[in-house]
Structures are given as C-alpha cells and as structure tokens.
Length: 130
View (tube, rainbow, N blue to C red):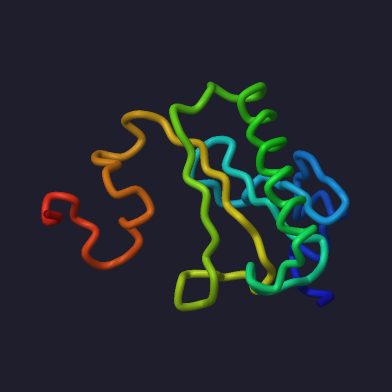
C-alpha cells in the first residue's frame, strides 16, 4: 500500500492531521467541500466501512466527536454537518482506503440544502418528493 495517501499519514506534504486515536486519524481534506472539512481515516488499510471491527467502529465514532470539537474551536461554529462514506467506486470513492467525511455546513452554503446527501444521487429534487 506504498502509494496510498492515507497509508502515508506521517507525510505532512500529504496529510495534515487534526487528531488521532489508536485505530483512526482525522486529517484535513486536501480538496475541502467547506472550510474545516476533515476525513476520519482508518490507520489499518481497510477498504470498506463494512470491514471494520467493533472496536474500530467505536474508535471511529469517538474520533468524529473529537474532530468536531476541534472544528468548533478552530472555525466558525457550523450550523450543521454532513457525515458520509463513499462506499465503493460506484458511490464516488476515489481512494480505496476507508475514510469518513465530516463536513461543516452553514446556512446559505448551497442554494437549497433540503435532501442533504441525496443531492449526490438521481431523484434528489426535494420539490418532487411527496
């Protein structure tokens, strides 16, 4: 896994680490969707969210909370968050190493936030929902 950006977590040219625990680290996204956009990344080269152990799931959640706390301290407090995993290439994953996005959201950051993550898929128009 020598060419995996996330496996090279100690390289500061590739990864700016926000915080970490035993099995995960949080890094600023190199192509952020919003200021403070971080990725919570498995230290073990796991490709799928569904490959995580029970302990890794707990550690991931704990680090999401810790990263959120740091974002609140270092950025304008967000009005909300989008938390997501692109599970597989069909879902838009571009790096085959598990990473969970934690994206700060603000009122007005998009024209119409209704539907949230659904805007990444067909049939996302909230006005068409019954």
